[in-house]
Length: 118
Length: 166
Image (cartoon, rainbow over all chains, first blue to last red; front, side, top):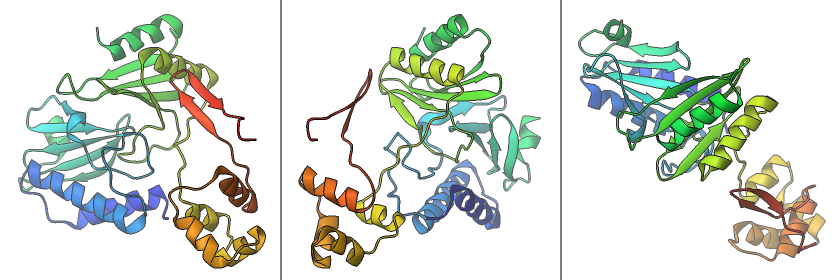
């Protein structure tokens, strides 16, 4: 099985190659599709997001981890070590906690999360 | 005051040097997060109302991964967070694998394992596909791979090793 670092890098590489998302819904679908594909291809761990305790698999943002931000056009999903921001315009940003940006991509409106939260 | 806010209060009282940050969900019923740090050693606690607490203290935090440990109530979760912070301990994700995976990481072929167990390779193949087997058989199989079988029961108050079976 590939290391989590390798799988995360591959997930970010594939996410960057996709066209800019039109809106938040498409951005979230891109995240889910890419991460699930990478985990299905690079691990033998079944996809079971209802499994709460770590099973070694990386899961895309879940509904119950939604948070509000200072801008109503930007939503945030918290996980153990990251925050994933998605804008209504389709921008995506992943920050390692406390605040290191590890991935950023503008939405179809050309705006990044940093533009919207500054 | 909800359960994770009570945990924040307990930390403030019992480990006043620890820095804490509570991350609230958009919905009250959503998942709450508490980041606690004591002199550079951090413990992340996740609270799911109605489900319990998830706790992780690890230098590596993979994206979207679940917590390493689960605790059903506030008392046991608080005890664990304080022990991890003050003892500067790390948690480990649970390791689970099927027998075939275990044999693979021990770099033992089915043929080799069969010789060690004095059975046929076909018998080993069947054993690896079973969903149930005698403890004595499992103990021999684990021993043939160089390990020792232990049986433990996990309770909210802690883990007990069961000695009944030798």
